[in-house]
Length: 236
Image (tube, rainbow, N blue to C red; front, side, top):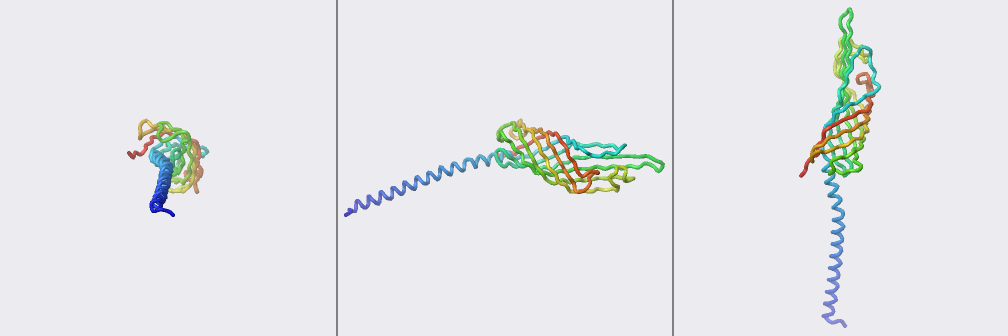
């Protein structure tokens, strides 16, 4: 026969054991939760530190362009601006838009007067690229990278013609626009001389194909080199 005191003591022991078990379970869950949250916080911080924007300028050596005898040709550097979104400690996503221009002009004089044809062709690539920093994190000032991306491109022809056909690319005044697509592959490095600002340098191969002729060509491809200014957004 169990006395009232024994019953109370047995109940008290059962309650105390249950409380201890509950406490241990909560402590384990809290420890496990802390271990899971800490990397998540670090990754979130790394994503924020990789956010930014920048501008680049460089040479794009487009190969295989046709030329007409007695015509003059000139090309501008490739100008580009971008926004960057951090994905994790080693990876960022860039959305960029650039512009490159090729000028073609020919002038001929004859008994009927002077014939002139001028075409300004603008190549406007709009790419989304992944930039991978294989050995560094966003807190380090010097970071080598590799990148690759693809997207659509816009081709714009601005023609001024007094006698069409001299360049062999059709006639008619006005502006024409053509849609295309393309990709780029590149590598380089970024060096930050302050917390927010840095310099970039690199090289790339860029290929663009249009659905119709732009400046007498459908494909623009070649290697290039570039330098730029990078800005990291600040959240503190």
